[in-house]
Image (cartoon, rainbow, N blue to C red; front, side):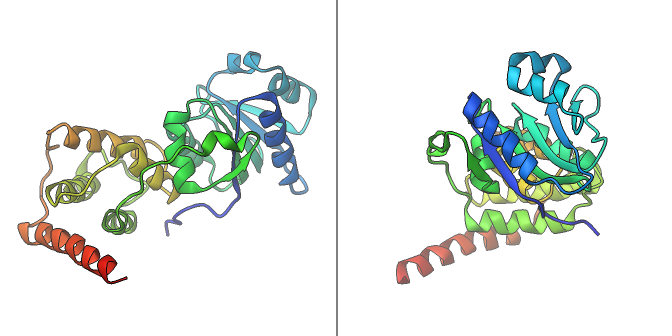
Length: 246
């Protein structure tokens, strides 16, 4: 059975040296007997960008280094320090290693891409926490309900690029769009990652949202019925009335 979400601690840290030191300390603090800390970078050469991480990987026998280019498979279970990762990197890493991850800390780089994941996943904030004070939009409760439905409906071992799972995802997105709900691609992808979507599916979800917002209707075998779209519209109206009574 597919297990939604994560059951291990999450953290994010600023990219300055104090933040990286805090991330390293956090990872070592979450080690169990026999664990290794895994340092992830996109490329092997990325280690040269920071002396602290290069020193950590080359000097400590209980630290392993993996790269996205090499497949990013953990050699041993333990905490993970993902250096300069974006949400899609996180999703693909989790797909390969979910059973071995003891805890996961991300060193920030592109804040615009990472803030939606931070706002949804709510990791522990390390280093310069003021980095994350920028307000982010929230998903409408009806959108969240439909995302929860999708999470429980699709087969997460499959791609949502084709077939039944594509039809499920795109039909719901089109239904929400037709009912007048705002679709925020990065925020929806971040929600998906925080709720157990892995591999390339969150990125594909964001791609569908971008196309729909641009006026394109991705081709599928079935659409939601007009009656269901009307139900989505009425759910928004009912929520508005309930909030007026509070």
